[in-house]
Length: 383
Ligand SMILES: *[C@@H]1O[C@H](CO)[C@@H](O)[C@H](O)[C@H]1NC(C)=O
Ligand SMILES: *[C@@H]1O[C@H](CO)[C@@H](O)[C@H](O)[C@H]1NC(C)=O
Ligand SMILES: *[C@@H]1O[C@H](CO)[C@@H](O)[C@H](O)[C@H]1NC(C)=O
Ligand SMILES: *[C@@H]1O[C@H](CO)[C@@H](O)[C@H](O)[C@H]1NC(C)=O
Ligand SMILES: *[C@@H]1O[C@H](CO)[C@@H](O)[C@H](O)[C@H]1NC(C)=O
Image 1 (cartoon, rainbow, N blue to C red):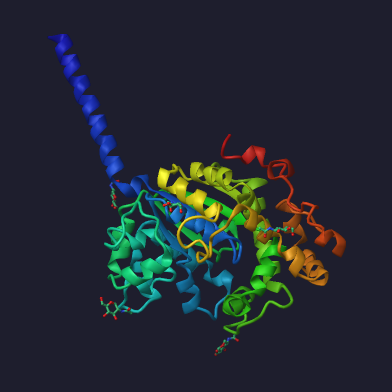
Image 2: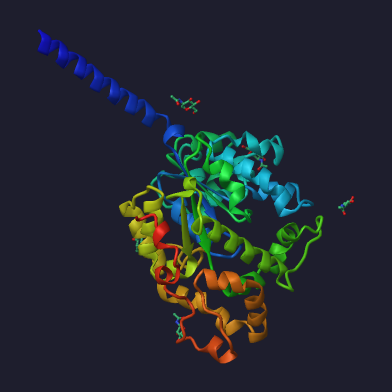
């Protein structure tokens, strides 16, 4: 009798615990992981975004704060920090009403900036043309999924365990502290950096496209500017130093296991190892389809291999990541090194002192990450 009662109540307790666990899992907002890919223009962040976007557990948006900057273009990046942060927080919580302030009242899913690069907006429940486990392409998605109502964005978001946002519009890690300590969020930050000299080369290929954003970075009250004197570059480099230093030198407790720095060059040289590290950090696992896709894109195989902007092949990509050494003049390199010296040193790149060094590709300017960064071991998410 006594034993039976005890067994009964234990069973009930266990059942109760199981139910509780189930209901907690069922509540996706409780369990969701929020990943912010924090980067700057032309640093490989579209590629990294795709690595997450194509994962069947991930709801991904690329640059949602583009809408904030476009709407309030006469303000400075610093002034817009709070509005950008507020938008990012709402998107993490799948509250898309935040776009009311920045978009027309009558709108479609396709009014969202770069919506078609998000696999989640190209598959169910946002669009019926693709499965969640499909690898989607921007082109195919644009043709098939553009006319769905905007409400699909929120509906889809709520069905995912991982919300991932890529942003280039934060210049200060402290701006994100309120999100890191927000109990309704589970925020992890992937800080993606790239050799500033390679960034400059890439920015030169899209001068016009960057002019408005440059004005906001330099606070020109809406005037577009070309970054001919590398003032924007200087600001970008300063922000990478600030973010990296803040996260690694004396990080506040709430940053523990929530910050991961990734260099684009490492990703290009050893994609699988870096991707595995990012996935592990994000609590995601590689599916067989993703493995095949990643193999394909890093080996130049599969459909649409020449078209996709994020496509890298190991050999090509290593070359591309070094292209600045052949393309830029030593005069330019010297200027960039002047304004970005701190970032180049801190992120583990080597300065060149002469044109000879610049052109000599046998000289590796990317130092091994873990050896170079003295504070890394104390802040490695693997520990
Ligand atoms: C479940 O999520 C909703 C938001 O989707 C939230 O309002 C509610 O409080 C959560 N339930 C629990 C038990 O936390
Ligand atoms: C939104 O989709 C509707 C049809 O579903 C279409 O009539 C309308 O033109 C679209 N609007 C935009 C801005 O694309
Ligand atoms: C910014 O530009 C607008 C017009 O485009 C002007 O009315 C305003 O006075 C300017 N603000 C400053 C601080 O210069
Ligand atoms: C990878 O490429 C092969 C060969 O082109 C193709 O059969 C396969 O479907 C591709 N995998 C993915 C996931 O795209
Ligand atoms: C990469 O660069 C090296 C040295 O400049 C060159 O010899 C090689 O052909 C390039 N490889 C590719 C795939 O472009």
